[in-house]
Length: 566
Image (cartoon, rainbow, N blue to C red):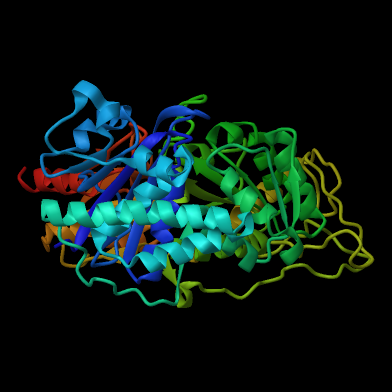
């Protein structure tokens, strides 16, 4: 009986892997199971080998595991590609005639094509595969066929009937195999309330943007940042969002700044390679003190790198972006809840402090799918920091906290001047050395209050009592949490940062008298270096991965055990 199962569907692009997993996730969610899914895909329109892992767990999990309990191999290349994850305990469902000499004893001949053709076309092979999975798990077929009716009703009764027939053939086969191989159905581990939402990271990010009052997005499409663009673009009429698909990234960030200058709550979305081109725009935002939220969906670089894989290699890029000295903030959410909440915080901070604020995600987080209870979707108060200008209005008036009252053109009688050159309080160009010094200090002063208001890390385990503290940021929240749970060693605890810059001064005290371990998906330990820079605390161990794959729970547990034995 399974209480934690990893199922992988693998095949070439165009074979319908996404269709299978989408159906499974929706039905499993409806049945109340805890589910988590992540995807690996190649940068090809057709061919290659794409895989999706679905975990069904008794305890809510949000992490990738290395092992595979059941593999549905839609092409012979799938087994070769996943060989390192396959063990003698893995059930492999495949079509024998397609594998030839590669056929092995732990394979289960699954006539996907035969059943699909009986239904009317090979196009139904993916529905047959989904039916096999439901038959094995013992989930009532009616729930799946009802889902198929919802999905295909617009195409007519005949298409619905054929999909249902394909599902039933697969389902009956799955039930037969489960009985023949002694595969017990899922035990009753359905604990999720029906009042949950199923979503991926891009959707959560978009919900957070809408909740924050975002009404302008500009972007030159670049995976994996494009998901946010398409989400908001599909909701322009419902929420009054202006969408600008720019001709390049330089135009995108400048459009965002122009919209923000006019009073919009603007965001730009890109990936690391696209953000390279936005550097001058970031510097412009710093000089003209115009709020802007910048989303970077990280992927491996440099250059094109691995365009459809994952990495956390752009922290330094964001941290040191833009020439000159000015204030910025960087968030790195790691769960659906954090994606929704920190996006709202990013907009509020950008508006309040009149600075560029970054949201760093990655392909793994954006494409992962899990559930969130409706009550966890928090909407923070929308704050407005725009004033009605008087005739004597000064856009860059000096103040104790370094923040000038922000006006926008057309709202009031004042003139709202901005200039990329150094300027005085009125926004007029100046080369006065004294004014220059005052303006630099003005732009940096707000960093002090920003630091004091920075989010504290999430504590995982007994941080105060632990001798060793494992630090993670961004998408590694779930894997760190599960690894520490499995390790069950009170000498270890964790800190997860959903804001990586600036760090709250309290972080230093959390690191006192601890052996610090940092895990992150890059080659040099970018956040480890930042922790030392910000706190003065040395990092004893760095657990780094930069293959383009996410950390698996197993390898983090093994790495921590190795440290424990030193």
